[in-house]
Length: 435
Image (cartoon, rainbow, N blue to C red; front, side, top):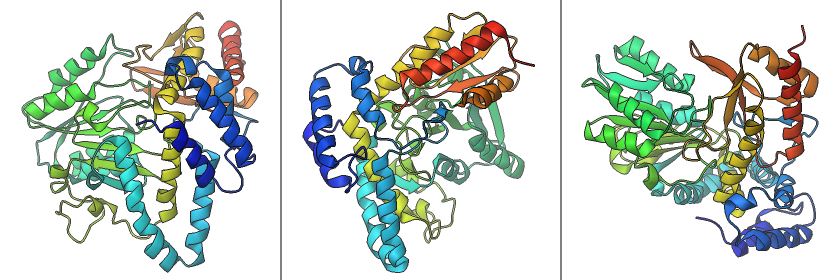
């Protein structure tokens, strides 16, 4: 749900501290934000996505290093200044007397964060576990669901290695079978992906692992269709939402899923080391916690949070990240990310030898895009982009399929920074890489 202009300005005045939202006085900032929100509030999100004046103000919300061009925000995203201020504030308070301030005061307050997070995802707070990252979230489910020797788990060749490693460990230790399949990059439509999952399940399939959006090419999957197909067959589905939450707008009801894990330090721009696990209430009891809890078979979602002493202040600062996200507007943010992806990709597709691996269909993609150049060493190109141009990208690939470069600009990225990236790649396409 989008936060109203009034609530956003209220959050700015009471949630920022003396430094102000952009490192300016809070009064000056509030006036500028109020003016910009008023100007765009009646405009379609796709139109706001192209309003550079609006996004200039959002860009100033980040205290980032402009001596480099970071186009790997999909790895770990920098948090806006208000989030980092909150981390420092809670951390300092915690450090004053950790056994009291952290355990007795801050720890109970994370229940409000749980509720705010549940409101954003569209579920009950009793279905949200606050964890450190999506790897922890999904390995709780992948290692905690009961499987027996001979049971089959189905996933794709594009799913994340950390998650597949959990399955391969069970394969070695317990005798389950891990089955993978590939798919076109990009596919013609979402039905192609839904059909491939249905084609590859068997009578032995007991579990499906699938990305909501892949980290390799940014391919969005038809999660609702996959979940409903699997449910009819008695198959559990675990959704990897590492790159989805805070990236594009959706609710749990749109997915009809039972188990979903997400990072909050990617597109939700929360502190590094924050994530969540959603488990439908009636499924909690059947999943064993990764770290043993007092009652491992209870139906209390908090059994997944027994990890020993950890920094409570990181979880509390998630509240500030949610405020920032809703203040901008989830749909505006989504459309801006998609606009930035199209800005570079549609230029590259005109260059000889470049293949875009990501669909332009808004149902299939958003801000993540990937490409490769025929006959060029993509690893070497990535090194040169950083060494000579101080542009950070990330290399991607799937064994026996392709290797390429993933590009993930964000809402603080300027068009001029993307122009510099485009100019650099265009030069090497036309002139080749140096020896």
